Length: 86
Image (cartoon, rainbow, N blue to C red; front, side, top):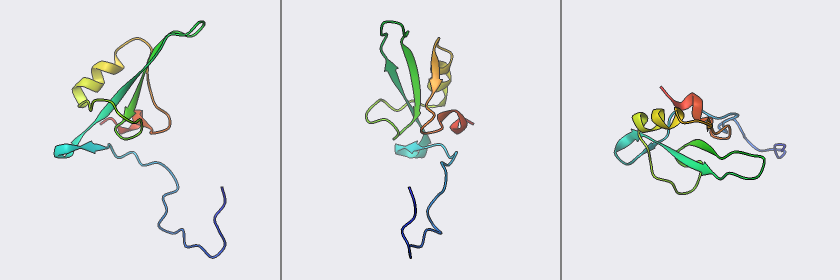
């Protein structure tokens, strides 16, 4: 992608922020996506900052820390979920 000529992009973020997302009540939240087992690829748990993946039940900090302890649990690289944890 390239900027359009004459456009003012001074207020456009150039990277992802590490600020945790929040849900109702202003609390931090994450969601978990279960990736199914496929031949040659074991299933996995993908952890997102809330809003990255549509749907999913919001999880609080204690719940998401427990989710990270599960085998084959990884943070989403798109939403930078790993750096959103305090």
